Length: 592
Image (tube, rainbow, N blue to C red; front, side, top):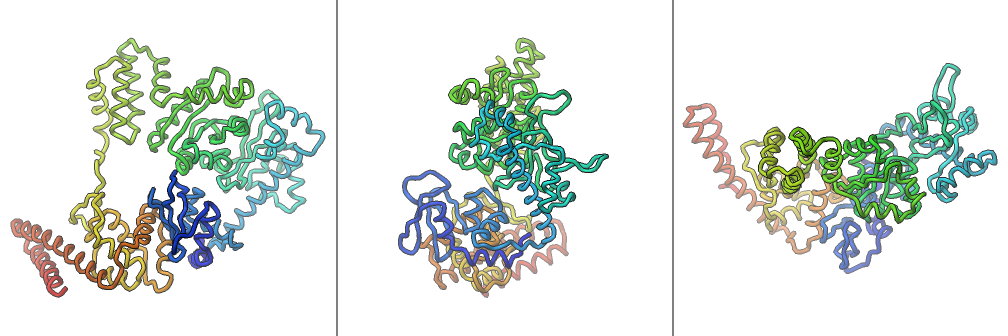
């Protein structure tokens, strides 16, 4: 965890215009800077940066916030990672609160990086490993690919242990970094006689290795990976994402393959929006990682049974997480690596163009497994397909795919819908068709529809309290969250009331530091950038009084109903308490 004082220092020493200008060209227009938004395509600049307020807002797509929010969006990192990146720009070391744990992890990064350099130099420079370089060249891996991905060779025979001990690493560190393994005869290199594939995290830090034999050996696994450790978790990472993330954003989709070479070979031949899942089937953590960059996935696993099972396992999870999924079926006996080497890039691109959606892919596999001409076969196919269709978030999409399924199976549409409703929908909580905001602290408070427009009264009050700590304190004393009718205004007020204490200096900067919610960040930046919203003292006072009056009248009306109910129930104790509350509100309105 990063100390708050350090976050404040990084923020105070960072100029948002300078940071954003290092990514996109920005031109001064009056007090502000204007640029083409990096988060959506546009021809006319609608992306505004305020050096005075140290915020940005795009009036095209709605993204906005402070410098931390910009970096998180641009680099697809979380808040602590954004702080770390800005600290590095300033030449500052991050003083983590758990300094001991931080240093322990840092030495692991240093160890795997040193090991990667050792393996890489062995492959590149040692004459005795020329046969391995020849093997890689035959597999379509040239020297520039070896350098790009820092491929290497692990000789084994404890050569890594000896090297690492010489440069100062202990056996305990090497074991924690999964570079050695303990046996009866003591420690030995984990990787021996294998081509090494460094595994990078999304920030291009080496966290582990994959090791591949270069000639077939009986009872010897083709691949082994680093063991799970403090740096490396197979389920949390995607091979090659550090190289391909920008192209994934640009293309609007990610091609997901299985193995290291399946990613490397297409990438080095110009198919840049590609990653490997480091094994069969995607994990939930990997899917969440992909979602930082795109909502479109193209799965390309091997065409054998194992590859089909991996694809089918991934489909439901991807759809459940609201991703668009297409599938490419490879010719039998090929993987992406061998297909491109043997038949060329154009053949691979043609297969991409002929990809099918998740529905068509799964239906074809099920038709191959069950007899579609029998009642039992149709029933099994329908059940399997409806299970996947039910993972979709859109009711419209569900209905359209159910229609397709009925047509494909030759069953009446209403029968398939009835089957779906009886077998799936009845077990689920009915989804709300409109967003409704419920106040957690007061169950009796009226519900408000989420898309209620933001009134000028609420805009004015928000504009002032976002820039004036005294006005904020006054608002907190006099208003309740439920007095605000706009969904986003209520969420923002809730955040401000619950997150901010007493603040005197750098008020806006504290607000921007505290925001972790993207929706609230964009909403606040839009309010602050809008020069048409009044922010004078009288406008604030009028807005405060108006909202207080509207809110208390709503509560008064509600109490009237509760009083009547208490009278009907004969609950004298509750009646007395409600009348006391009603009188207090009445006095407040008269005195206000």
